[in-house]
Image (cartoon, rainbow, N blue to C red; front, side, top):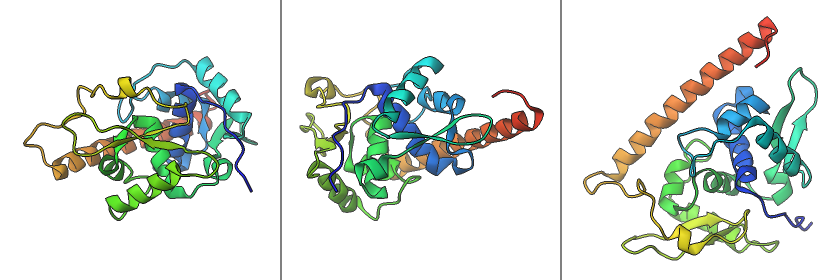
Length: 224
């Protein structure tokens, strides 16, 4: 069965999809997400590029737009409406590919090595070649490419990849390196991975506190 042709998504729409996919793995106890939790995830300052500040009304509008092609579905029942992504079914992709798309939607263009490290909580890839294999499949997808390999930046050793859910990327804009993209020369890959693991642990602790607050609000009958 052929996948339906997808509309070109806005930054906020891809952010909503990325957050839903990410939180499905990192905070499964509170997934599907309430609108309040989804707004918080979209406006999160860590593990996001670019950082945005979306209002509740803007996120709600993005949800409604994504419900058209069934990329987002609303859970029935419960006092508070909750939302889940439907990427795997709509795009007919395996979980590994969904994990890579999620990271590209949340953090922008990345190399295969960066994707492997950043994907740890969503899917653990055996090696970089496994990541590259799934990226190639996404780039050569018969129903339409979902990722593209960007031209190599001056001085870079690896090419970065970008998602195509928002259309073709602006190559000139992508060619401008981020201020924090390159680590200092004496920082090892292991140290970078350890720092990212610490950040991920702290994010999980914060998500756990949010879950506790949500449960307390439910028990007390207070709106989130």
